[in-house]
Length: 481
Image 1 (cartoon, helix red, strand yellow):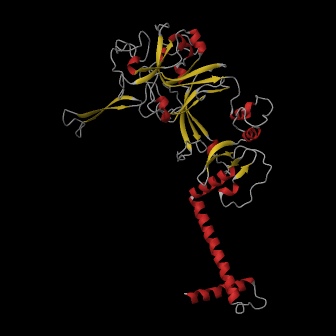
Image 2 (tube, rainbow, N blue to C red):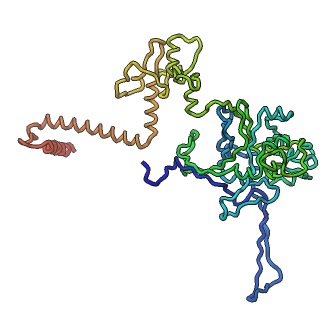
């Protein structure tokens, strides 16, 4: 039950326009000066004292240092196939300020004042591009797979002689050296690059205005979020993520390549208008290519078929979309040429597994998990079950043991022993049962030895009789001590 007016965390989603970092990535210089004035406001000495510090804010730029810790997920998932032709690919980041840690503008970015205009537009420096084989046909020479290079290959040969950029454009057009690299960056650092014909880029890339709308922050409940084995449950039930969304829909029937690319300082290469075709900066040669740093790359197929979870479940075991239910909905192994009894067991969800017996011998037994339903003609085992061997069944049709219930009994025991509260309760119950047996035996001894002395008077209640038994037991205990 939920209290009136309280929204459950699992149903709460909050959208934020952006989350600007305190300082963008880059170099900074801080100067502090001090001057002492007299009562009249005149300086006591003609020299002011000052001190200058130089520091840097480092962050991912041309590659992700730790993709697993930076990217929470991508959609569509890598190598997925389904009805994605109406879904814009996007990337989810665990760091909510990451999409705004740099800027696509060549100069200082135009940002809303912190705390004054939280709903103002702020362009992200990241974009999700989508390409497929039709783009290769339209632009011969376009390679859809990113190429491994080094950061120096983002510079023109005049700045880095070993660069493979040639006459193409990139982030450091016109540079004469590699001074444009940030703190901790080196020309030999490995990066993934993609050379996109500028004419194609001007057609499919987002505009600067689009970049202000293609990223946002989302706060959602993470209470029911799946966790990896060994992870601890989140301390905060609400997670904050940043999402960067692509601006091009995948084509149905095509294998789409999605790229998370950096657009830092590339505002001049972006389309001038939403119609595309013309870069914002005049004088660019559309016959050249633009080299982009690829931070993430994955592929998926837009087949046009439904891909929701319920659709995938309904299509198990060869069931056609919208067709009749499958004859056997179980997840099962298929072994061509299997004999009748073995094929029947496999169809019921059984799998043959190695089985180590208590006697030290090894055999192969049938096992079927609890999520593989099958009709059972025989009744269940009599309860209680004192050991797993008690529910170890023999299948005469295949000559193999069925260890399913024995495995379930063992798993239940291990889970109970791992639960400290359950183990403590079980110990207290067993101790109480043992004490009850001792008490019953003592009462029998007292009744047999002192029956004539503890006969209750006529009309005595059960409580009185019990009190007489307890009194005689205390007398007995005092005598033996």
